[in-house]
Image (tube, rainbow, N blue to C red):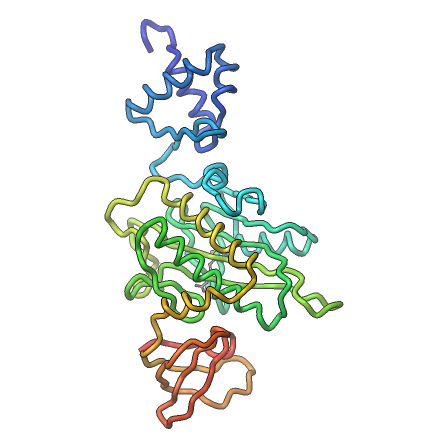
Length: 335
Ligand code: BTN
């Protein structure tokens, strides 16, 4: 402040701070502060030069990023390309589980496609009743609510498509190459950085899929205190030290939405090739553990020969017997 009089720049910064992490248009700032848009732009440039992290986006306006890597619904929407206008983006600062939120929406009869994104989950869910650690500010926790016209038995292909969409988005935004561990985990080297949980509701009338919920959790930054002891051996993050690109969480989130929506709109299986190419199981030995009441006979150690066009894992047991494993039938541990 100069001589007790608040300057134009300070007024603009105050306005941006009140709206931190959301966009406010140049016109709105100009109207509120009785300025021309040119004067607003001049002050914004000067504030940026002083080190304030202000995004300027055509047709959206200005957005002050209040911490170094915030997650914001407005910024995710601003980054969307293919999916822009094709999906409802619902952003929550915190929630119990975005999968549960999406299912609730589905049960209420919400007919549009939606993606629910949260900065923190207090009851993040993993597969088989496990929890999914979802600390604030460090990851990406998002669930799609979709109404695909597919058979119930093909619903697992959504999981495989989501794995490819996420791996592809990671390459596009961070330049890092994630592997896919059949069925629904992404790995960087030996560390799991992403898990996917697909749930759904079956219509009793048509016996088709009423809706599907595809939940994706990505560890972007590692917690300062380390991962919880129960997952410490296996969990990793995209950035464990090293400089992350600006705005990486919003950009990655938007790229996942763009990639995944495009794949589900196309509705074909062209993603299977990339799924296979990114597999970290082909050529390795796995332990096949049946679970549930599946009537499976075979179990034990097997070599992974391939992933077929249905995303089934083709394995050969030590006695030479070959089998094609479908998701949900078995759990596989890599050796
Ligand atoms: C797994 O690794 O077992 C699957 C983890 C899936 C986590 C995501 S985070 C967003 C969505 N909401 C949840 O409660 N779970 C999924």
